[in-house]
Image 1 (cartoon, rainbow, N blue to C red):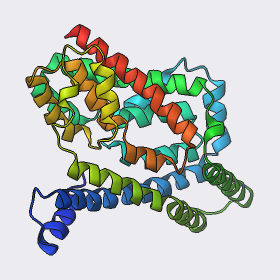
Image 2 (image 1 turned 90 degrees about the vertical axis):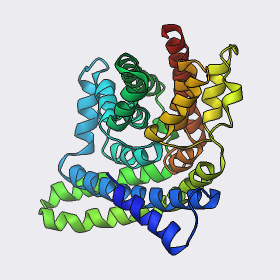
Image 3 (image 1 turned 45 degrees about the horizontal axis):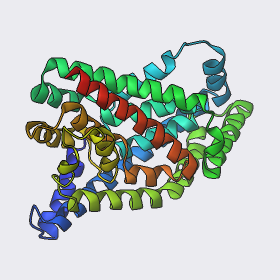
Length: 325
């Protein structure tokens, strides 16, 4: 999907700057250029698209529909399924998260998407089948969707909206003002574009510094942390291997397709599958770069609650996998 961005990163790092493949600095820089290009384009497209959607579908109506209609948790499940069909890493999912919040989607439903999107996607599923077989893949898909659904439900019940940052609340207020203007003055689509574009610029200016810092942290981790660094902590005889693996995964940053070969190596070395998968979920679902990006939209307390709930669900999933296999 973003092969052209990877080609640009490769050209700049290996051809223009003449780095050699395999160098730590080269890998970190390549990762930074690729992810920055990809995420900034996603940010622009998602915010612009959601601006158009919001101009025609009032935020209040979306909120009222989801709050008044008893969907019995189906909204969290549907958000998780949407996460399955969006092949993004955790940091790439943040632009969609911002778009969802701006569009009036409840926070718990938005979290369900944010959790599932990096964990389960068609690329990871294809690799999972080849590496571990169909049965294990099906169980993994189900566990990933359930993880997003249950976590989203729990986070919604905690009523965490008050922990969104003032910046988000300002964005929501501006979105509501825009809708009032659109509805009262009956503006044409062409007339709406100018207002939508101005809001896109404001949002991008507010979040770009966090994007660059977050990706820079991810690039350094990607380039300098050895893949086998954490293996000694995941021994099958260690009762606490699953929570240790999950927590130690947080400093790393990689997408599901990138970490799966590492998981295969861990399993081949005798590490239980559930422990290895918990490590994988921690790497792709929780990361310091993601936390850095989310800092623009969430207070530290909300980030801590979000990471805590997801970490607990990942640990439970890891133990369940170990019991099954």
